[in-house]
Length: 472
Image (cartoon, rainbow, N blue to C red):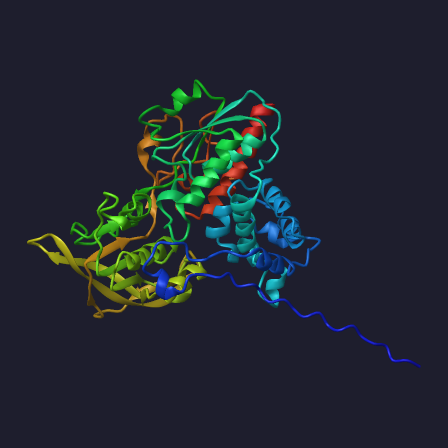
């Protein structure tokens, strides 16, 4: 009787780490931190996907990318097939692969994550997009026959660009109106070069232009033209103007020179290339002791930017603990690696300054402790009486969110607004109270993530298409 010989157990493939700049080098330059996968690393990582029959990762994606399908293409070395599959649902894969919070969305739902590291879906999406841009055949996805319908998209941010891409594929004519001198919205002015290079944003927008989108920059709707005037020329309008109104702490001393909103600080350094002053003529205070107030991704961007502008100390001052930070784990990790100092369980009380010069010199903070959870589910910070102390700083950046800019909404009768000034829109369709007008992204929800804005754009584009082809 012969013994049954068992086949050797297949060795488990570990998650493939993406190569990146060493922290000691990148903390003083604005070049992108991760280098991206090589084809070999991408195919190796794609092998980890077990091709679930009921893929939960897809359920976690706000734009519903067919994730197992594009990963299967990568595994087989069909890089063109992978990008075609992604384009069916997402016109901005190079952006999403870099800035979306995959750990709580698609990767957070990956079945492998129950016992091991989930498949690196975001890294693979980035690879597919980058490979196509750098080495691909400059293919375009197939478009439906022209419908003769015209849609105006106001705002060239994540939600607006998603609507444009979707409707172009469905055969509609799309005109995009952007207030700034380049399309991209928050992708352009709000996310630093080291996290999302401007060339990537430009390429994604160029992709939409190659598909037929007409992009008009330096066009401030609400000032140059009103929404009602656009309605005379277009069959439908999507409003994706974001929420770019600065929000401050409302504590004494915010008038001192050296106190910035995150909007201004990042716009100056990112979009206007103040980090290369005087080569570019946008000045910015290059503080030596910089404090950023807030705990989200924008706060991490500001604190990491301060280091690159030459700060000796870049602080994150946040009133809760590390466990409650809303920023992505990867962004916090990169900030720590680069030397950002976290002053947690601290709340600012007032800014201090030299009244003669008007310049910021410090901030008084109050120590906190965590109490019971609040409405957000996070433990509420409670002040510790008598624990005030001073931190010497010469620059402060307020990164606690942003509000709705009223320029467009005030000039558009018929739009319903909530108590915060955001547009009221159906959460399943994006329809506003004004006929033939849809809205989505931060102007509806307040500050949120890029991919959630894109998800709102996806729902709105489906509703707009239904209206254009079938009517209300």
